[in-house]
Length: 484
Ligand code: ADP
Image (cartoon, rainbow, N blue to C red; front, side, top):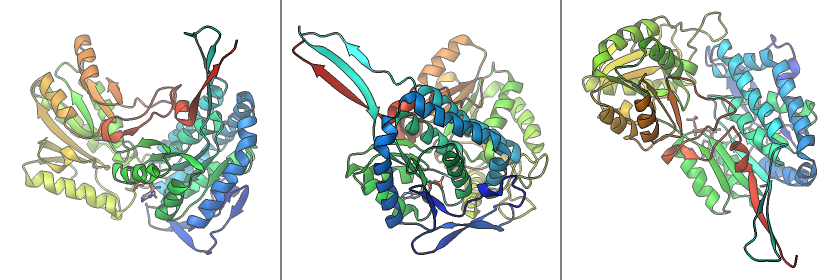
């Protein structure tokens, strides 16, 4: 931590109502580095009472914030964006230390995270209404869009910055305050972002962060009638609990949940491009993203050739501490993550799967894991049904386009899908047939701030980023004027 250029970005307190504070109980949670299990620092173990105070502060701050013009909010968001980019190195270092991803990826995430603040700074000026042609004389029908109110956000550890800015950007642009509960594994990135928001001049109560018990904080966020919207990124399991908890106060919810992404390689694909795409999609963040390829489906004619090239590319990955030059694979987030990968491998091998590369923990120990390919995987295996969320690439074989589509859609999830082909007819057919919110066609990393991110089926509700992303933070009001 001493290596931070600006040591004041390391915050061990939460930001509530413009004050940096400890938990009422004085209790803290240790934050560790997954690369060596060392303790990096501590954050407050907050709960219901502190969350309630933060919600009250947000309510109090809301009227002034919503009264600003879009352009005035835009200026503040732009200042936040500039500060995030000016502190990219420090934020990246904090992220690698608490999350484990290689520094190059952390720098990339900081830029990606900042892009949402920049984009929504621009969109703050473009919240348009409508004038609807009347059907009855003497009337005028108008639609205006207004901020929904206090927003609560619960975010995961895999993208400690971007999952926050993708929510805070549109909330603030729309005119809403946001209260953030980051994952307990990665609170320092969140607290540093809040410190920069404060420095940018965003008023007290508009961006707040509480760390601590997910159940207590999440419970208060979902029960409070003052919170008008809950936005969550995390597992489908927890998402379902939160949706149920929000029913009591009929809150609007946005949910970015789990995926089970198919990555389809057709016979006519450019294999080298497909390898580039699958490497980025599967092994980015050690396979710990909800859009990571989870099932690699390869057509008969190129199955062996694909496997050979894929094996060479995976063997070239470099496992190590995320801070070390050249590392492409850091540690997994925790022991439970490693156990899940091991369990999926054991299950696949028990049912006829074959290890092509890797297959076990890395010699460094801890939560380092060797990037792994398993071939001859079938739909009966656990890897076919569940998100592995780790560096395991299971390869399936298929015969026809229809088979590939049926296999790809045979899941309750529907976040991201990918396919590689040079046939324009197939591009349209398969692109339309896949039941997913995001489809990468000859492209392994489609996420960008100007395009909508989100899933269908049990992968979620709502969209983040793009011109659609702000709608989730706005209410539509219909004004009917008579007597004209
Ligand atoms: P992951 O598998 O990515 O850790 P989770 O869904 O478990 O996903 O966690 C995502 C976020 O949800 C974290 O901030 C976590 O603390 C929070 N969380 C987990 N369980 C609950 C719960 N019951 N209520 C509210 N938040 C929760």
